[in-house]
Length: 184
Image 1 (cartoon, rainbow, N blue to C red):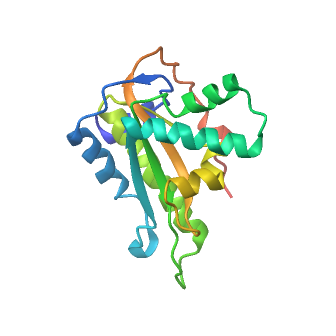
Image 2 (image 1 turned 90 degrees about the horizontal axis):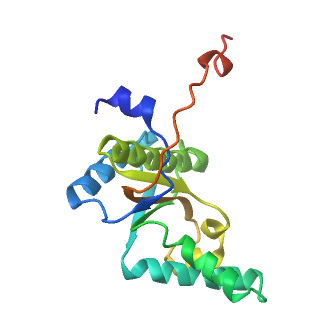
């Protein structure tokens, strides 16, 4: 798939199943991430691959975080929270790890991490791999961040749920460029 086709046709694929993409396919995704725009080439990001039994541990972290917020959490609600970690055979966590720099503000470094996440989504799409970018309360919860080994200055930028497409895909909604672009 050429670059413009990938850019113009990518959509989120929220329902995925196994198997995990091949090492070659994943290497392509990570290589794309490393080409993200990055002022001063700081590479202010890193990635965690969570798969197999580690997904169960991620689910346990989600439950611990939910129970810390709501100690009366029911068993059904805890199971629902745990299952959020199990929606894909692979979760790639993008971690923004900004560094002090006289010319590159932290926001720009966070955006570089976001671009790296988007590049992985595009590379997945170009290879026929299903993927969706999710965040939410769990990605900001201190218990989850500590459990995943984040440093105090790091934050979760994205949780990419990756696998083989297992459900219907929505059709692309054509957007009018003129609704978003104006001359100044």
